[in-house]
Length: 265
Image 1 (tube, rainbow, N blue to C red):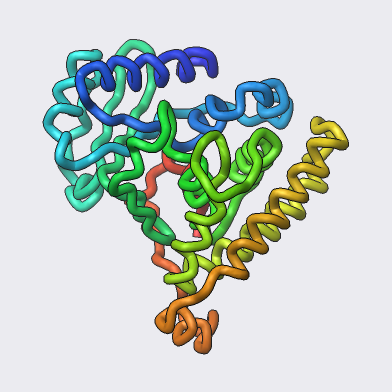
Image 2: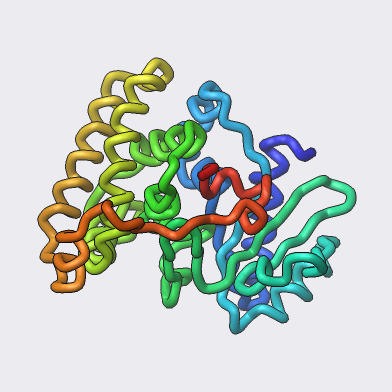
């Protein structure tokens, strides 16, 4: 197993070398949170948040180029022998010598809710945009402690606003959730869980950090609530959680190495 510094350096190197070949690889997962909040690395580590693998989002139109690139980087593709459905919009690679595992998700992250990335990989680098880093976590129906730790450092490091330039684009998030009541409802529950998690993990943060995180949670919540909702959203909201509002994430599809992206159901 590679150490945390190896994960970060390897991830950054892969993004840079892929970009030089015109290939869009963008990081998500715990490594992306670490990279996008460099001034909070020591706090991330103090909260016992190790890095376990490298996850990318890419465009399916570059599927073949991505596989060729990673093979040249000495990664071995995992063959879809027993669970071909696992590989519909995802590619898996392992490195035989450095022990690093890579997942490449194509066009979307489809778990408890679906996050689409059309025209979004050009917005930020080396990670997916901050808005999608937030959505990656808030789509998880059973949020775990690792997810909360990731979100706390992200909110400590970044303001919430209406654009993507080193800012959590609350306007973009609110716009997406205003069309999808299920995703909205899961996000609403998770923002409250993150708020409560701050009380558990506040010790490593300064008092100003704590205030900033609370204020940014308030701002994001307000932007989501105030965004005009579609008729489809309102119709589904009238039914509420009496009917399941999220997708089940099958254990075999999730696999052990995806625990950073979603939690046990």
